[in-house]
Length: 270
Image (cartoon, rainbow, N blue to C red; front, top):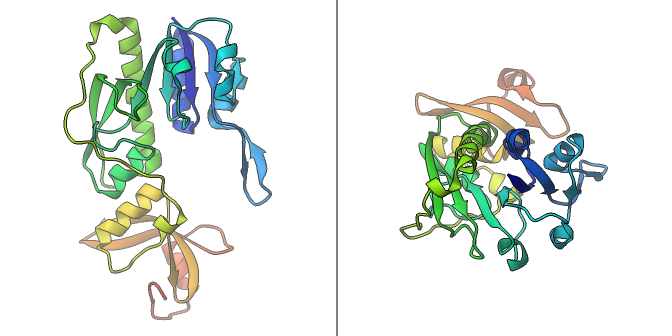
């Protein structure tokens, strides 16, 4: 089958790699390079690097879509981050992997939102793309477990494995799978910012743990020092800090950080 692939983030790469082994990839679309790090070096997206390494035709502007010489049989979109217009949606069937129990958690951050809310399970949906965000009919839906200490990264890996299986199953015989309209009241997610990483120590230990595993870190002060808490666990209903990073220093384990306080009483948020 002739496919156009559209995606950006690293967890998409193994899914696209699986598709490229079985199908003719006529073009790949991804986000334009972004400045990264302290030196603001322009950096290609993980999907861009992957496409180059496989010698595929790669584009960083959706405006290039009309320049594609071959007509695809289908367009596969995963974590692309660009709104598709009618010229794309009407060219071929556009299918999308969305990691949530649709219509729950439509929008840009379903995995992080599920973790932040402490959800125990989530669906991975293979759906038809329409102009309205994440509102298309669903062809396939598979449920996965969210473990207590799953992070955004580990859950993305789970989603990628399931997504590759779902796409392989669907593309073998698309006519086998009817389009099922979403039912129920939709809820929506938003993009998280640095402000969401700030820890409120009045919240429960479970809430703070969820915040850190969803967003990758929690920002706070401990004994007057600016720190990022990188990893936690819940033990006996208490928050246990595993890994921490003081400002300007490398990440370290909690014991090493405590030793550096030389016996001071620990003050959280001060």
